[in-house]
Length: 195
Image 1 (spheres, rainbow, N blue to C red):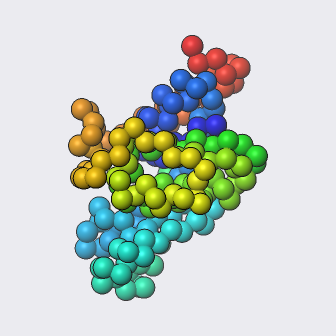
Image 2: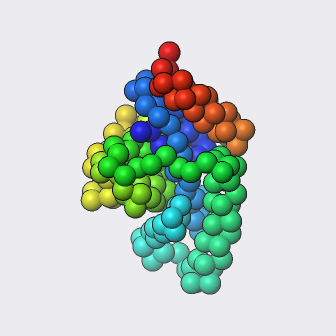
């Protein structure tokens, strides 16, 4: 099955699921941004209490345990809000013994993608593939032992911002994520025909 990382990764995952004619769901993860520089990930959290710490960033930036915990608490609240927003009362798709293709719109530091891979493993996926259109070259090696396969169309040495690799990179709304998941569920309920 295909699992998109909200929000932008769900738009890419929807197209992957349609092309492969596979079920689509989400894995909810949140970046833990450095308090002084929120776009820089000092780690990530995911469903099922997954926590990833970026020890390189934590060694470079003066981040106290109190600051880290404060960011984690705030992001866990947002993770819960998004889980309810995207799934409602539905349970996540069952991953036990499944092949999981985790899709994001781009991988910069890799913290959220690692968290997603760990969530899939915790839920019993037997094979985990991380797929993305663009991944920073320095992030590629960190997935050894976390996922079975990494598929990235572009692996630049100087990624910069992920949005730089798209002709159109507007923010994906919660409404768009819910609509794509609804469309995918309708296809699955009708027997999986994506045509």
